[in-house]
Length: 388
Ligand code: AMP
Image 1 (cartoon, rainbow, N blue to C red):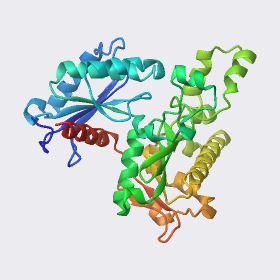
Image 2 (cartoon, rainbow, N blue to C red):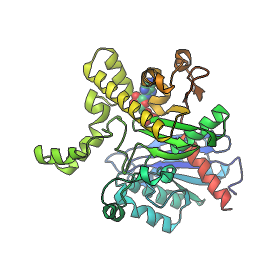
Image 3 (cartoon, rainbow, N blue to C red):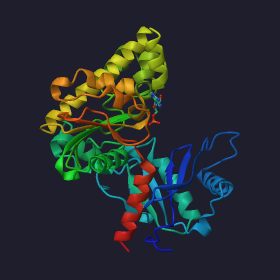
């Protein structure tokens, strides 16, 4: 089966340390044949002892959904890999050397790359089709040195591969291109800020389709306020809490990643719940929202300056796509930067990509549903077609 057989599907896998999210789809038409998540891999009593068993569960679930991968002629497997390090700036066909290289990046992404590797190994053992790794950091390989470089001694950065890598790149890439389609404008012709607001949150500055800045850094902890992650804090928080509160580095790391953000401020990490509590008068939830919105405005302004002017602001992911009140609040005080939303457009219930600013606004504000699986499937077949 050739990668140019345009009816044949691609299996997209997003493997975590204890989960295996999958979707079978046809990249050219975006038709989804099936999808799901195998959870609690490796946990006692789950019946799924490892990723190989997880993969057997995937094929069984696909069978139950009426998808016979043998008969549909699976074209390829596309793997989401969180960290591509300094060298992977494009998707690659997986072979033993690539597996070694991804393993070599585990110190940079100890929570994410091991799961991806397990998923890759299990899929290679199961499906005799080309496997492609698509990296979440790749879209940000284009960051100029002034945006990617931390102002710490050069030899330390070089030895430990420390830089701003950025994450959610597959989403930022997909969404920034979809905006060009939506507006009917060449991608090269405008600047934009993309706000990916889900459980994890990140902003990017994109100039003519090329990423020039992003809020996540060496790890996905930096930047915006997230569900459970703090985003930006003074890095001296580590020293302070270590010395003054006798917390270990691991405890501080867990606190900043798992007990901070909306959860740390409001007690809950689900954005809908924070909104509901704030509407009910809960002062903690109100402060959480204020901090969340303030940080967003901070990045929008900074990126407008980095880009030398902003043409388009785009909201995506769970919060960005669904919360009209949040979008209105973020934009409400940015009128002097040329931003506004039309209340009727903003509040219209729609699952489609759309413009929500009034006609004639200096900055076009859009809402674009992200689709990381489709982006991975497209990149997978594009690479295979190029190398055919
Ligand atoms: P994601 O990580 O993209 O799946 O986004 C998850 C986040 O989106 C959670 O914080 C949800 O509370 C939030 N979310 C989903 N639907 C809505 C909605 N209708 N209004 C506000 N937030 C939402």
